[in-house]
Image (cartoon, one colour):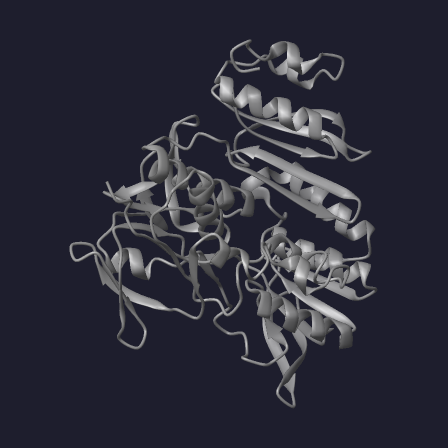
Length: 410
């Protein structure tokens, strides 16, 4: 039986991982990647850290050498914008009118950075998503003295940390009273804010930009909701993304909330898979539908989809995982919880070497760690076990957490 033609829509973490994993699994059918990007797949975490700071140069940012795709028999087509298609006809419609046929389809269209409705379109008001965005910010940072970050999420915070390491002044404006409180809880958010303040970031919470001041086509200052006027010469808006759902909607795929509803194996329809930022995944371990916007999750989604295509349908069971390095702090997170879940702390909060377990109904749903990798890894095993946990043992640093992990989960 001839292997089906696989078309992958999206040249990010999902698309690259899926294509390479298919070949590693011996898949010998056609593989085509349609990417709207101008550049071949690159390692996105570098964009807010090492590449932005000039610590690595361009060749290291790319996931693979330019020739590797052709050597693997993968057709990589850049600057290909898909605007619609037909599930029944197994076709995708490209901007300009051309069509691409598929037998198996992987959709990983990612997301588009949100902008503030009242933000001017000045050349020094930027968002970060692509390599080209990063190159523009890197160039602008070299000439800037004070950066305004609108939003205190992970991307904005990583850029802020990089800017401070480059000797730039940073003003971080966050509308919530505490950064990341919805995701990680107020107490963790306070620690997070204190880390940035201790490194010289001017963190303003519970306020927004009320007025933008421009001169000569560029923003040179803002007035905040508290009435303060602040001079800035570069602005990064980092308030999250909107998942790119136009193509899934055009194909008639099921939409749930802000994502495409997929099953445990990331399948949205027969021979159609969705991964990464757009996938509302029915996670088989956590027992709930989740949508996660993190690089490591995207790569694993790609590998999981490749397994189903090459070797037969299989659920994608790995827990969501992400990491963020800021200054000398290494943050890791496993699982999927909420800041409203019960938080159990373990370790040295003041010394920034601790973990926080997020429990719901006695079970751990997520674990966040700062400079505490071993506990984070064990926490992941406890999540996978779905066991009811003793909070006192979790909090007691003298207890070896590996002893709590059931034999089957260890």
